[in-house]
Image 1 (cartoon, helix red, strand yellow):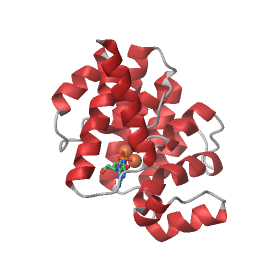
Image 2 (cartoon, protein in one colour):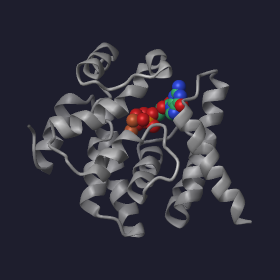
Image 3 (cartoon, protein in one colour):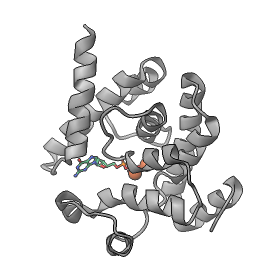
Image 4 (cartoon, rainbow, N blue to C red):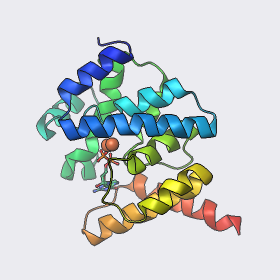
Length: 194
Ligand code: DGI
Ligand code: FE
Ligand code: FE
């Protein structure tokens, strides 16, 4: 078991590739900034940010093997797009290897790729920080979303989901039911406002 922040960072530096490690640090400090704004535990935000992609650099075969070994269900779409499994496997590794037993942190890792309906503030923070951290530069609307994240996090979540669904449609990729349900949920929240 790898415990405490310093050792976890050291271990992530060894298991992730360079860009993924930089992204991980970017998500952790962006999540801490959002946690200050929305009055969430900075420690939880940092830990969830550090660990959200801890399974990202594992091969598809290994992710699938981990799921089978530990009775983690694999949906049809995850079978087709095994990279989606890095969230579930990451949540498992956070508990098993890094000794995290805080359910809020585990859920934030679990939901970070697809999002879900009615997310907790920590879950929204990780979902948004993953998209806006400073090393990201490809997505559309980044400038608007970065500012929006600190003004109205539900709106930021909604724009990210809208853009992600559109991006996946343009690439003819299958959309997970969690992604779609989450998008519809936040769309309704935003539309109900006015
Ligand atoms: O792991 P990261 O790259 O930091 O970010 P992430 O875990 O949010 O993964 C982002 C990718 O996941 C992005 O290319 C969009 C994709 N994604 C999100 N929801 C779905 C999805 N891909 C498919 N096929 N279906 C989804 O529902
Ligand atoms: Fe991820
Ligand atoms: Fe990420």
